[in-house]
Amino acid sequence: MPAMRVAVGLPSYQEADSIAYVVSQVDRGLTHLFDPADCAIVNVDGNSPDRTSSVFLQTPTRCRKVSLVVTDSPPGKGRNVLRFLRYCNENAVDLIATFDADVVTVTPEWVRALLTPVIRREAHYVTPLYTRSRFEAAITNHFAYPLFYGFSGLDIRQPIGGDFGLSGSLVNYLLQRPVDDSVYRYGIDIFMSMHAVGGGFRLVQAALGHKLHKPTFHKMPGMFCDVASAAVAVMRHYRIKTSGDDAGHVRPGIDDSSQYPHCQQAQELFKEMRSKGAELEPIYRAWLGSDSSSLRATLHGDAPRLSSETWADLLAAAVSNALWRAPALPAYLFAERLAPLFIMRAVTFWSENSTRDPLSVHEEIVGQAQIFRKKLLERAGLRA
Image 1 (cartoon, rainbow, N blue to C red):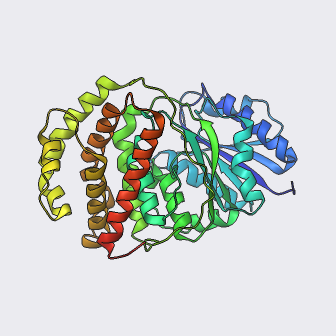
Image 2: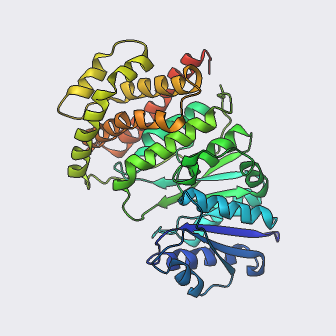
């Protein structure tokens, strides 16, 4: 491999129990590809009280380590990632990657998979492809993937994920884009992915295998609002692409897990969101522009019931409203209004798919994205 300046960023907050493992795996991956003297592993920490930065610095590596502590407000993962990207830009780094600091399944091969397409100039941006349980990645499956597919025409399953490869030119472009507040929190991944497409950068997807990290179910409503808000804010700066190039993606895998680990929590969250959704019913009807018996059944029924077809139609109506009918509407307000329907869709999906075979689960997720793209293009008056 040719020598070049390389940096891998680890945004963190209270990851003292996991960051040493990630650092060790990243160091091994980098030293297999490059001279360690050309590499830096950069921890950008949100001023953790649990010694995350100290553990990072004490972990033995062959590559140089850089510790940056961010105390700016609002705090969040996106704030840390943007600080890392500025570090790369200031130091003329050519080859960049990010890794979540709490991933317990990262291997040195992940480093190779994310960086090699950029080294070979096959892509400016490499997104991850994880093997997921049907109960994981609800925001990806039911919002980020269909939205990204509808916006770009690219069948890339992980526009959000945390582990990415980037070129220096893409980093420079991203740092010049306007930043919505949600990007400073969990909206950073969709912000990077959608700007990469909107800016005409080449994307590919790398298969990484299973991604296991700390439980995130309790964060899902907030994470959804950040992702949805950031996505709409970015989309307002670009036109929807009516066709997509071959992204070189690998077909995703759904594992055969049938365990429903957060069943009780999901049912309780469904009841809360059903109540909020009922209050927002007039807004949903305004988005759709017509009555919907299936929507009424969802908002007023006792069981989770929001089909992929109805959800895709509602999502297309909501996004088209936010983009074209009410472009001055704050993106976060749009996201908060959509959140109850997203939760209902996620819980419906989990309830209905606990025993189905992985292929049919995958096909439903892909079909949902295809319906959304068709509906969104129709509302935009465009054809694929």
